[in-house]
Image (cartoon, rainbow, N blue to C red; front, top):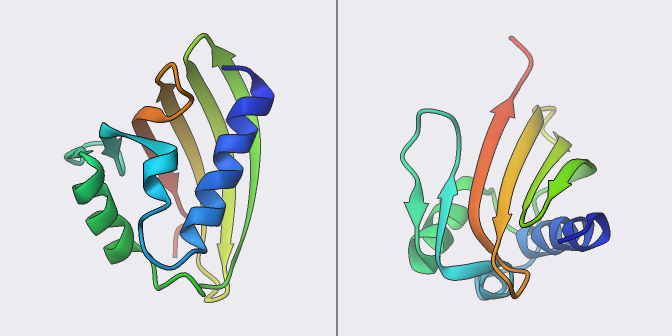
Length: 119
């Protein structure tokens, strides 16, 4: 993977979040991918379970948000990115994503470290 491929994958992730349903996840994640939604949480494994979590976590594909990303590092098949997400509700997050990619460019392991400002 290189930086442009990782940036393209992140763009695909954002487009998928904004798209109804979860069919687009198959282009982003391997069938047996693991998705760790936060430190100390249990990983979600496999496309069906990732899709179920995806639908439970988002308000819907019309959810209002802005997302920016910066690639921090790419080393072989592993990449780290810093993201900022601001929702129309006023909620905001700064995330670190650690992604391990399969040879076909889909993510085989995704780890998210979400942080939000104190209330």
